[in-house]
Image: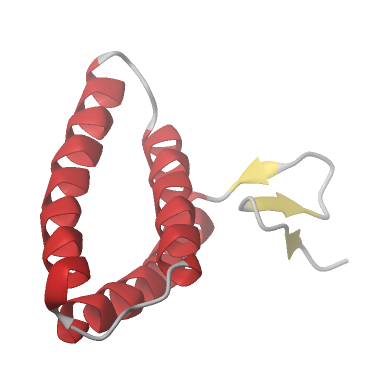
Length: 104
């Protein structure tokens, strides 16, 4: 019987489930590419939306790094940090996909 992976990165098909951190990291990278694409379009479009996105992008990254550092310093696992980053990426994808750009 071949092992299968669910979307959470858990390997199934053996007698017990085994967490696979590589899968979660890979999914984070794939999901983050969509945010990069949406942000580049927003920045290239310019105007107020582009400026606001550039500012929020830097602020979000500083906050996310601080959150990751705090989680790890308090004994959290790297898997917890990756899961939280994926939540941030999903929220950004939703936000950036929902807004319409207005010509400057």
